[in-house]
Every structure is written in C-alpha cells, then in structure tokens.
Length: 147
Image 1 (cartoon, rainbow, N blue to C red):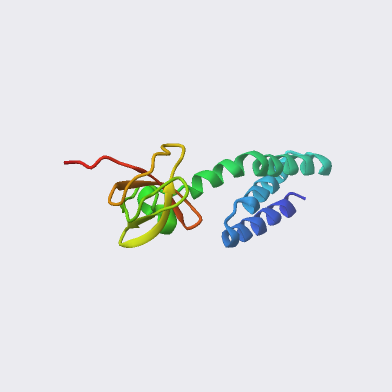
Image 2: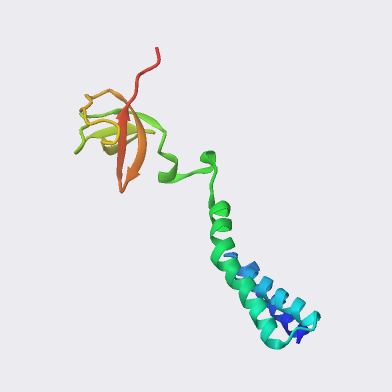
C-alpha cells in the first residue's frame, strides 16, 4: 500500500507544478505521511488518518500563511492603481471631502479628501499625496512643499 501513497504524492506534486496554489503540494505531503505510516507497518486506517491529518492541517493552517507571504509584493514592484498610494500630485481644482480633481503623473484624476486625515478643503494648486484609491477616485490629503 505504501507504493500507492507514493504514486498519489507524485501525481499531486505534478498537478501542483501546473496550478501553484499549494493545495496539491499539501495533499502530496499527506500522501507521503500515509506512505511513511505504511512503511512503519501501520494499518490502512492509520495511513488514511495520517494522510488526512497532514494534508488537512497543512491546507487549514500552513497554506493561508504561505500564500500571504508568496503574494506580498515589494512596494517598488507595484504597478497600475496599486502603485499610486504614496505618490504626490497637485490639486487641479478645489478638493473637498466630496469631490475634486488632481493632477497625478500627467493625468487628471477625480479626487476627494481622505477624511481620516482631514476634512478641510484644499485650494487649486495645493500639493497632495494619495493615501489610497477608491474605484477611480484618489483619496488624498495636503502636504507641505519643501522649500
């Protein structure tokens, strides 16, 4: 029976190479645990319990943490809308908590004040920093210009 578990592990790892979401890798680890139990002379029910425990525990506890680390992107590698928070621009019109326009990277964006930072309207020409993007609107707050 141990060879069967090894075959299951090999197939699961092969599938993991195609899908790369860690589920099949952990199923393969469970199959290896079942194979180890078989090699130690454990009955079939113990092999199944070992395999299910390792695979299930890995999927429930290890996979979410590993995926979070794998998908973390360095700030300098962000692109598109994800790259905008932290960028600076200027108010192209008065910006309030409800509406406004700003110039950002040569484009005009709809903007509104990030009310977690300020609610005081800012006049045209004021330097702004983007705190986050909400749909197609930049949430911003004013910054002091360096002289």
